[in-house]
Amino acid sequence: MIQQREQTSSKEELKYKLQILKEAIDADYLLQHLGFNISKSTPKEVRAACKIHGGDNKTAFRMNKQTKNWVCFSHGCHEEGYDVINLVMRMLNLDFSDAVRYLESITGLNIHDEKSYVEYKRFKDRQEVIQHSSRYELPPAHVTEEYLKNFKKFRSNYFEKEKNGGFPKEVLDEFEIGGGFCDRYGFQRDVIPIRDKEGKLVAYSCRDITDKADYDYKYLLTEGFEKDLVLYNLHKAKNYMGKSRTIIVVEGFKSVWKLYIAGYKNTVACMGSRLTEGQRNLLYSASFNVITLFDGDGSGVKGTLNAIKEMKDKINLIPLFLPYADKDPADYDIEELKYIIGDIE
Ligand SMILES: [Zn+2]
Image 1 (cartoon, rainbow, N blue to C red):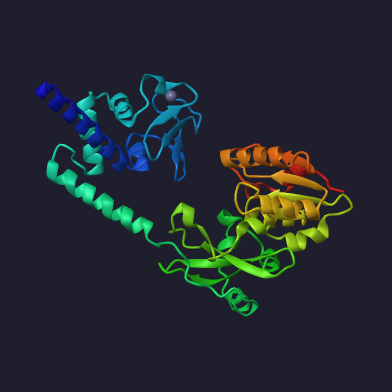
Image 2 (cartoon, helix red, strand yellow):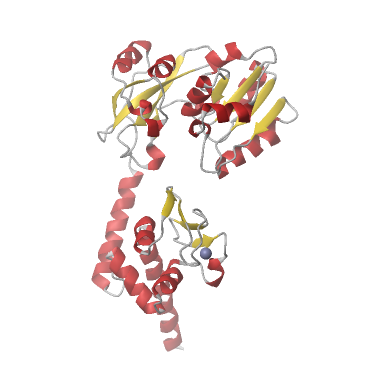
């Protein structure tokens, strides 16, 4: 009886240790080591062609960055086991315990050695504390016309670069983009002013231009800003709605600028993938027709479906979907956008 209990507890302990080991794995690093060609890496997952069955669909294989579990959409390779140890066993033709040793060598975390393991746990705990402190808050910013004028002098060429949208200076001027903002970790940021429907300056969104900030902190909003009561660019877009009083809603700032270049000056951004109640009310009072053109990814589609559900009886809603899951409106050519959106009276 006692022996049995000991066995259960050591089994539990092994399970726990394996879980810690899986957490310690860097998904990108591991997959590169295993010879995968990574096509996309987001904070949540890594996509690649599936090396197990050797397919060429570049996004068929997806690994969750937290659990390190994976799926193969084109061949169902995961049906024989979807965890990371199983992946290593199959890719390198190893048995279970050798696959674990391989992962130990790759992570530098030896779960067989009590000392290394305890040290790693301590490191993890410390990391968590740091992450939960106010690491990414912006220092207080002065949201005033006077300060904005200063920021405008220090705009970088970040958004002009081809890979960041290739926006012409005139367009960045039109949207009053500034720069020279430094967050408390020393990351330089460009400044996107946000105005309410009357044109009053209410916030800045500050874009990391060093590409060093973590994915979730690429754009930071100034403190105390209530996003649900504002649609970005509404103060200008409302003057271009035409006879049909049509407004186009996109998710992000860059999409607004891109549609502006394409001639759709009646575009606003909800600054997220979901229209809030306050934002929907702004649309009801400003327009008769609403076109949604959210990002092509899963949350964009969800946001669109949500808008259909919430708005269908209240306004004429025209939901548009983008053809590619990994692109947002700013990634398309002007001609492509014109084709997708069409003419608006
Ligand atoms: Zn496969």
